Length: 222
Image 1: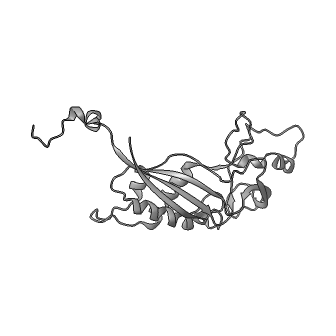
Image 2: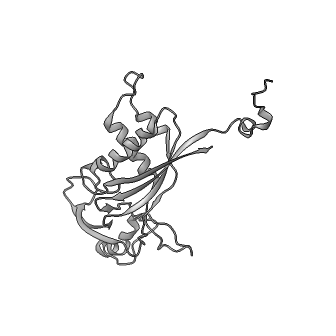
Image 3: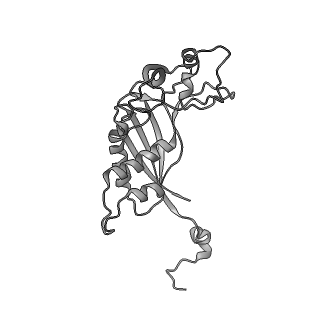
């Protein structure tokens, strides 16, 4: 072995062999339009009470449309959050919407890369926290079957958080073909083009738009 060579016996990374360096970014977001929650209320988990009408049932259960963390005592009045999968789909849908071709890959776009090569590590808890019991509601007349243009309409209440709602997410970059600036680009554009939650821009609405306030990258071994 030459004088300048490094023995694998003294190199921790070489000894592990299977360690892979991955890029993770911590992103701070700020909502620019109201965030509307629309999770379906499970009728089996929350059945109607005896002689309870549809309006009374709606008044009792509308906060179950939120995503919320259980509080420290196992109760159901924890802070609201946006699921990690919502950000994952936002990035995928932005890549699909733009249909930007990868240089040197013919007609291949970034869609498949963002579907398989990006991971959002955890849900985004709203900051400052908004408890389930404190969230405001917005009443609207909507189609009873949930389909646009439905003839029969009913009153529904949707949990709503006014801007500027804030939060933080962590995105793991798995696919080495995807560069860091491409992740940031699609996240920023997705915040305006697609948005989050009910009635977001992706579906023709205007709720759930956000801006990226800061991005910090680090490399971790996986």
